[in-house]
Each structure stands twice: as structure tokens, then as C-alpha cells.
Image 1 (cartoon, rainbow, N blue to C red):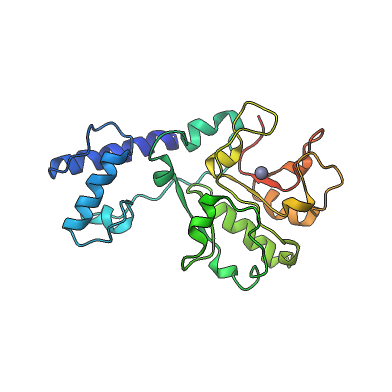
Image 2 (tube, helix red, strand yellow; image 1 turned 30 degrees about the horizontal axis):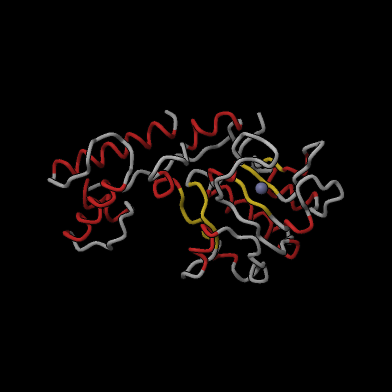
Length: 238
Ligand SMILES: [Zn+2]
């Protein structure tokens, strides 16, 4: 089953349950919109849960008396054309709340403490000052990013990471019509200042790139014509 279908089914299940409990979610359509969120907030208030409008483990357990279903991990990166199918449509209201999670790198805080979060987008900045360390990413690739950073640390390459250039950022690719993989939160930029888009004499090392490539990420530094050496994405090009 594709992730997007299962997500829609989960939201439907949620809306159906809330409806049965007399909370108004609007229609049972599988789309996590503002009315569904308001219903969740009411449910959380009535049940003495943390009132954040986000369906996490506690809220799901209270509703269904079973643990929150684990997000599907994607073992091989899909083609860029399939991203909408696999990762969902970031243009739909509620997609962000349902799809993005914290990629928590707290366990590497010591090693990464000098990384300057330079070009971080507003989306990332909103979370960085809380009691965790990392960035927002798509839930089905969060563990992949953690694994990549684990490679970086265990291979002793963390000093090579100087600035973090962001992850989730819905936008079209430079000079093109198609969507950047940043739109789904499945790509990150590292050391952008020294590895600019189209720059052929970039600084990114092969060793650092392999920490990502070894587990399925595609490195923009391999792209001929217009390399994008700062860029690592969990999707193939075609
Ligand atoms: Zn990028």
C-alpha cells in the first residue's frame, strides 16, 4: 500500500471515531483540515491530554485503545516523479501536521554543537529553540537522516559540517517548473556557502557525501551540468 493511501485511511479512521464520539470534524474525507484539528483539540481538552491539535501516541491511544501506527519506512528512494504518490501532497492543508516530524539529533549535540544553522527556513527555525536539536523532515525519512548523521559522526567527519542550509521548504527548483525535493522535507543542504548551486569547484568531500549515499541518498554533487553539491535528497532523479 502506498503511504499516501494509508495516511488518508488513517485520517478517515480518526474522523470516523471522532464523529462517533460526537465531535464535529466536518466530513469524513481523509483530509486533515482545520475542522478535524479543532475536533482533536476539543477531544484533547475533554480527556486531559496535552492540547496541541496533533495526533500523537497519547491521543491515538485514548481514541482507539491501541498504539499509534508506525509510519512506513521507505527502504529505497522513489523517483522524483513518484514523490507526490509516496510522500503526499504538501499543498493540501494539514499535510504538514500529518507528515513532518522532528528529526531529532540530540544524541549528536556535542559533535554538532558548532554547526551554524545559517540558511534555516522559518519552518525549521520555529522548532530549534525548544528542548531538542535537529530539524523537521518527512516522517518516512527521519530515521534515514539520523542514520546518515550517525555515519558522519562514526567516520569522524562532523567537523566538515559547518552550516546547515535547511530541509523542509516548499518551492520550485531553480530555473525549472518542477518541485524541489525540499517541498516534501526529504532533502537537506549542507555548507551551502561553499557548495553553491551550479558551482563545479565545490568543497564537499567524497567521504562526507558517502555517509549519505551509502544509505540511499542521492547527492547533487554527482549531477553533471549544474551540480548542487550542498544537496542530499531521499529520491532518485527519474
Ligand atoms: Zn537542496
